[in-house]
Structures are given as structure tokens and as C-alpha cells.
Image (cartoon, rainbow, N blue to C red):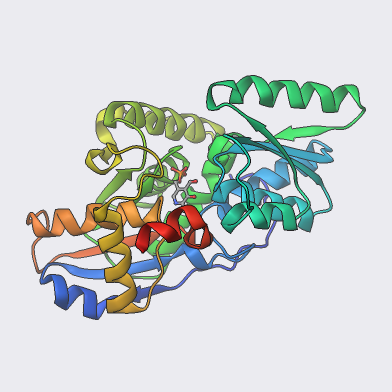
Length: 320
Ligand SMILES: Cc1ncc(COP(=O)(O)O)c(C=O)c1O
């Protein structure tokens, strides 16, 4: 049923209890699924997607991986690492201007030997196409990994992640996670449908309005189902998205993220990242404080990684 994948992720990722944080908040029982520990260059949610994407690249005979992201993109860092690991060249299209000093994820992109091209955010798609064309003209065989690794191929990684979680034998009334390009949420939603998870799947939007993300996730989940030969349609209104914390904009570190990052660090010794999991955890704290869950319920926080961005000066300085 599933196409082949490469095997380099450290799976299953552990599920841990968060007893001190649970007591501190006085709300539902909290657990965390440690996809920050998936292996591959400090881990994160892209490892699961890249197992399928790199397998597809190999099947197509690709020798060069091309993808795009923000300056501190976790997706780009992990894609560059995967390319290095399988002996493929890698070009990253990063939005913005090169900073004076490459730190956090960007420093790791350099370490993995990726070629970096800079562009204005509005030019990203054009630059991707142009890069792929240029490489073809030079005789290379490029494989384009979509933004966030969120194609039906990448989404398969999170369909299986849901199966993995269910096989771990723990129940959760709700699963909450950061959602942006939508692949993680699409995979979890489809996995829930295929493998029988009936709790809530709450995507905390990092940068998109609710309706946009619902539409994207529903389309991706439906396309992925078709890829698996399943005749089912997932509708936007079935996708639960909270977009309140996305309003300050992508990568804008507010007091809400800082409080969540400090709280997870000081209550549980657990690191979150400033852009994605810090924002998702800020949403979790607010929902608990508003009484969205009862004390008898259990909520799983699916940690999607991103911690190298903590070491980028632009975010670290925000904590001073
Ligand atoms: C650490 C982290 N968490 C969550 C996400 C969001 O995942 P998705 O793009 O699949 O919605 C990303 C995307 O880059 C990420 O880097």
C-alpha cells in the first residue's frame, strides 16, 4: 500500500509524560511525542517526510536536491543533511538577505555543503523553477522538494507517524502541534482516518489564516489518500486549526512564545523552538487556561523539532 521509503529516522520516537507542567497548569494530563528526536541533523518533523521524498528522488535517478525556505528553515537544514547523507548535491533557495553571520540552522546548511541562493520572498517560486531549469541545462538531474516537504509523498511520513503513535498504546483526547505548510497535519489527519484515532487533532497555525490552512491540509490529505489508492475525501471543515497565535507574523517572537519556551524549559528541562513549537506551546497554554480541556482529559503535544533556531542570534537576543 505504501511506496518504498529510505530508513534513517530514529523510530518510534518516545512518548513522555510532563508531570511537573501538568501540575503547574492544573489542567489535563500532558504528554509529549518527541519528534525532535527523529535523528538526522538534530531531528525534527522533516525526517519522516524525507524518508519518502529521498526514496522518490532516488527512484527518479536524481543527483541534486533543490528546496526553499526561510533563513532559519529547519526544513532546509534537514534536507541539506539528507542530501549529504545520500551523496546528492543540494541547492537551497532562502528568502531574504544573507545575515552578517550564519548561525543556527543557516550555519548547519553551510556545514552540510549546500549551495545557497538568496531571493525576495515574492520571487521564491520563480527562483526555484529557474534553478531547476539551470541545473537541467547543465546536465544535472534535479529533484524539487516542495516547501516544507509537504507533497503527498512527504505527507506519507506523518500518515505512518499516526500509526506509530497508536501502536504505542497510549490514548490522547487531543493531539496538538505546530502547523505551517500543512504536511504534518495532513498526514496525522489521514492517518487518524485510516488507523482509527478519534480524538481531536489541533493544528496551531504558525503563519497562515485558519481558512487557508484548512483548505491546504484538506487538499493534501485527500491527494495523499488517492496516492494510497484510498477513495476518501477530507473536507476543510474537518480540519481543526487555531490561528490566533499566527497573527503577529512568521517568526515574530512575542511574550507568548517566550513564556511557553521558558515554562517547558524550567518545568520539564525540555527545549522548544522560537518559531514553531514555541508558538504551538503558547497556544496550548492559552487553551488550557481558558478551560478548553478538562482535568480528566489527556493532551499530547507533538514536538516537531526546530531547536537549532534557538541558537540563532535573532531569536536568542529576544530573550535578553
Ligand atoms: C519545527 C517545525 N515544526 C513544525 C513545522 C510545521 O510543519 P508543516 O510544515 O508540516 O506544517 C515545521 C515546518 O517547517 C517545523 O520546522
